[in-house]
Structures are given as C-alpha cells and as structure tokens.
Image 1 (cartoon, rainbow, N blue to C red):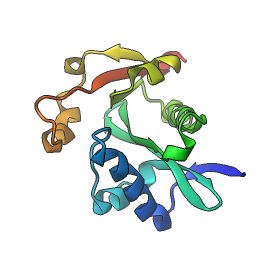
Image 2 (image 1 turned 90 degrees about the vertical axis):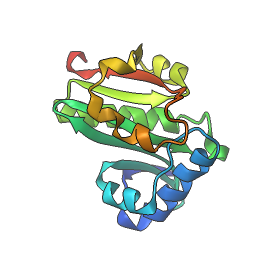
Image 3 (image 1 turned 45 degrees about the vertical axis):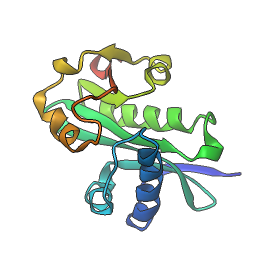
Image 4 (image 1 turned 135 degrees about the vertical axis):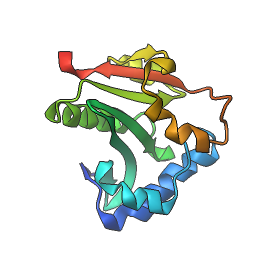
Length: 155
C-alpha cells in the first residue's frame, strides 16, 4: 500500500483528533480538543494510507530556539512499521531548517526516542513555559512521563 508523509490538511483535523484521543484514553498521550487540533494544524505532519490518516505528530515551537515534539500517534494496526520514526525524523528535519537548538518530548516510551539519538533529560532543565499543558493533564502532578531531548544544532 502507498504511504504518504506530509503536512496535515484542515480536512484531516477530525482524524487527527480521534487518533490522539484514542491514545489519550489509554493514558499514553495528553488529550486534545478538536479546537486545539485545528488551532495547531500547521504543527502537524501525518502519514496517510489510502487517503486515511494512520499516524501523526506535531512540532510545536515553545520558546526561542526550543520546540516540543508532541501528539505522536500511530494506529494500532501499523505499530512497529516505522511510521513513528518517519514522523520524528521529519520533525527533526524541520527543526534543523528552522535553526532550532533543541527539541524535547515528554514520553512513556523513552527507549523509542533513544534509538533515534535522543537522550533522557531532567524535566526541570526545560523552561517553565513548557509546563503549561501539564496543568491540564489528568495525571498532574504525579506525572510519569520522561523528558527526552535532541540537540539539533550539532547534527
């Protein structure tokens, strides 16, 4: 089957919303409202198969030369197919083009990121601004996510 990686389209907002919130109900992602998805649609990349969104991720600028990789999700049937890596690589490439210094993610899957050259970091080392969404999380303040970072100014 033909896969297509590209920028998300407004018409895919509902599919992205459903995919993110499927994983949110499993406690693996922070839930997003449909409004948040549409407001941030320019941050999203998607992988499409037969015109359906099968994976997504967003690169969101948070501060100066820092961005967060967030809402990375792949449908169940396509887990371990390389789509997560494809999306992470695309977001890192965009970060290089934007001349970012670092990208971070908060994750329950640090080993996935470590295989891609990311490193675990102390969440306290990140600017306080990145915690804005933490307050909305149902797991706050007992967060179990691990911060991972990649320094892209050295790539």
